[in-house]
Figure 1: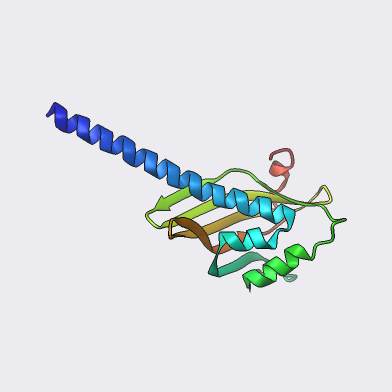
Figure 2 (figure 1 turned 90 degrees about the vertical axis):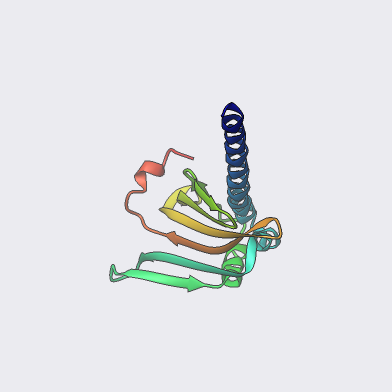
Length: 157
């Protein structure tokens, strides 16, 4: 019985370590994505994404109604790389909720977005990833965008 319990303990420890390593790898993809985002590096940004990546955003339109917009990853890259160098933009992440289940992972990151040092908006990013050939690739990004409730993020990074 002692041998069985020892074996069970070891298996549990190694399994927990493997999950933690995968969670770290998934978080590293999101961190790398935002480092490339801030550098406006379209080549690096493309390397984090699956070829069929989908991008969506939720926010209120001019009438105050919820609007779901969808863009291609190419459109996203064009927008990011066309931001003038005189414009300083910064997306600060305020935590990570990482979930991994086999080849599927999700990451939720509350954020605040600043333009030239001023708060533009805040929300939550949700990344969905798949593990292909030993690499995690982003297959879906959806975020919320708004101005309400952003004050709590002003002095956090």
